[in-house]
Image 1 (cartoon, helix red, strand yellow):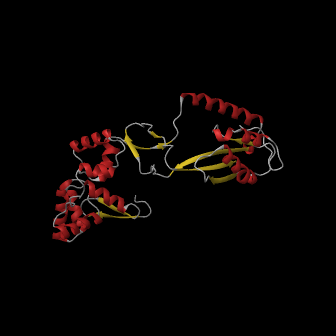
Image 2: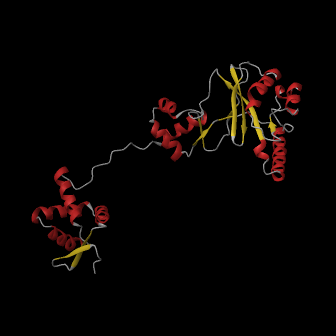
Length: 300
């Protein structure tokens, strides 16, 4: 029995009931188009030219090929295509030819020899479309574009220092729930103005992460910037006019810029690294001595 929403009619002399379901007509039409051979389509078009009757085409189709007949939409689609193109076959699909094995090997050699090479540069050197190079790298060579990292190189001794710091911090947090709210994390960064590395455009192609790093050159033209971070506040940035940050320069920055911006919270911890300017006697004495404008615990 046909379900609600579908209509049907019998093909004369066959006993076959053909349904046209409003919900699935498009899907069924696509299935018929894919399952029908070119010969079956051609016969259907010929029968339609002779009779101009969809029902007769369906009856002839079932009789000749002993399979369910095509839908009305399929028959009309084949007829229309024949009138427009002179054939019931689909037009050949246009597309880029697949990259040859020799080109794949050339691409592999190029990026193995120079993993930081851009796909644009490789396209120019190898005479292969940039899109094809990307496809080969991803799909055939399974290379991935790893992002370059700009970092300071770590020494073996740094590992134990970082581990001990992490253990100490976890202990302090367990003892005092508000501990992190009372820390000011401070540091300086050096920005080199002689040039830069664009990490977004620089990629290292390979099947495994090479963990490639670049340590900035310290003696090039630069500007030093200081910043302090609290749980809910940023202090800075402060740009040093001096090329070298001495203990006197650092002290002036603390007194005139940083300290006046710090909210009055009891027992604040001031975190700073071991740079010589940070550990000058005048700086340590200033940070460790309570005053009306600051209430610091010992520096971390």
